[in-house]
Length: 123
Image 1 (spheres, one colour):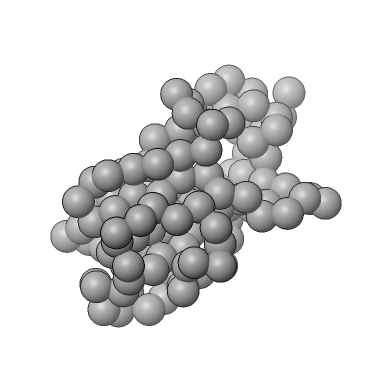
Image 2: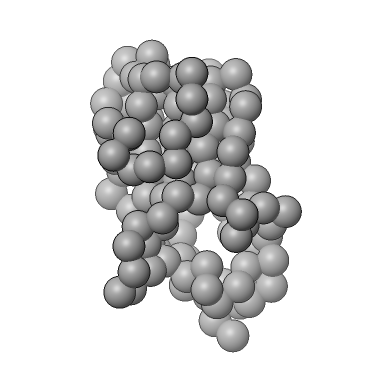
């Protein structure tokens, strides 16, 4: 399975941005897809996850601002980011795993990773 993330860029605080992550390979390997992010000098942290059936979970820090969605026909997951803050600036990574019974928030539970896309938020 290969994951290709895209959509990062520079945005002003308060603005919006949508990230995409297209998966290739066996669809069952991406039953659960997620976004993580890593800011400079910080550990990678969970942002949001979604099961194949649309059930989602997200970090408290992004609830109400970020929405994760997926298009199963395209095997693509999206992260719609609104009301961006400077603290949202990071490299965003998409991840996938075949299991779908639990929406894991720990990166060790994910088998496949994309290359990351940089989001910069200016004040």
